[in-house]
Amino acid sequence: MSTHTVTAFDEDLKEIQQLVRDMVNLASTMIDEATKSLISTDSALAKRVVSEDLIMDDYQRRLDDRAIVLIGKRQPMAQDLRAVVGALRMAGDLERIGDLAKNIAKRVDAVGKSSMPRELARSIEDMTGLVLEQVHGVIEEYEARNPEGLVRLRDEDELIDVRYTAVFRELLTYMMEDARNITACTHLLFCAKNLERIGDHVTNIAENAYYVLTGAQLPVERPKQDETGMPAPVA
Amino acid sequence: MSTHTVTAFDEDLKEIQQLVRDMVNLASTMIDEATKSLISTDSALAKRVVSEDLIMDDYQRRLDDRAIVLIGKRQPMAQDLRAVVGALRMAGDLERIGDLAKNIAKRVDAVGKSSMPRELARSIEDMTGLVLEQVHGVIEEYEARNPEGLVRLRDEDELIDVRYTAVFRELLTYMMEDARNITACTHLLFCAKNLERIGDHVTNIAENAYYVLTGAQLPVERPKQDETGMPAPVA
Image (tube, rainbow over all chains, first blue to last red; front, side, top):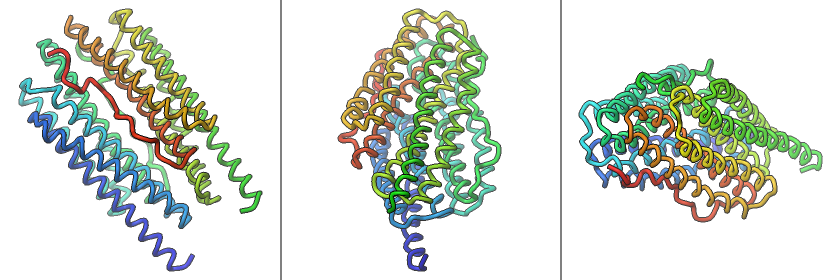
């Protein structure tokens, strides 16, 4: 393979990786705004998140097209091929993260002004903070080519799961206290679940990034934990 | 490209497409069993679904490995490349469908014996029936190379969304009637949502299959509908 070809491939790959970076930045903005719109019942901000999801979908389409053209044109092998296929998969997870943030935003009106207790808002904000740390972390470890960081990050998803289980129980309590809370709390349950699922997608991204960097699967898959599926603490 | 190479590619692709077919069959079994275990509180059947998900993950890993080796070895172009990339993406959606079925099964014990009203069981069974029709339909239209069938199928996902919205409202009603229903109904809400999401993944598969067959994106994306995000019918 000539030096020219290698350089051309690298440049094409760089464009694709820039698109991954753009998608991560947008995902992070959408998650942050979705939670803010939910906590403050800000319909305008929620609408903005919904429209940002169109940009996310467009990023994914562009990345997909470029990746497929690149594979066909440059016929990369080994790590180069892994990098392109890895970018395709990461884009899939990032697009799903955008969908989940959008879904939170779309519930803002359904949750309504029904006076979210301060502790509950705090719990959801804390969960969002953890999720955002994971989203930023995964791309930083990948760009720094640090597989060990990706392993650590994958394991830290458990913190999100633990927080989700706590929010789930908090919401059940509010519903039982007063039937008028049920509709709003049901939508909040889905919002919390969406944040937990965003964490799962970050885990997928970490696993993919690890595979791109090392050519090996991440050791010992961490069992997914949604403790709310366990026998419930309340009847 | 020699006839030998074309044949070798076709054989490799056939193996990959057989894996897609195996994943569809397993997904269908898992969805069916998950709902049956939920309706009849059959913990043994639920455990079976959870273990089947390991087989699903293994199918996906095998498919991924073969697809990447195939791209590297045969360097397919145009429709051949689309078919391999399409299979990779379909496998991603089928793996997620397996996860969602497993998640339903894992909620069986949390829902418990708490006397599911017959109408509610019927609604969930009907929704599952629609989902299974879609799962079977998408692979049949793809194998029959019928893009028009895939368009129709994508549009039929709306039937599942409508059914989901009805189940969602039914569940809210039960929760408001009696606070003792809240925990079980909350888990059932997630189960119904998972069925609705399985429908969304079938839509993704239909879109991918259409792209493989035609080289074009499916015309006019159907807006995803989860009506429960709209202002709720009850306070």
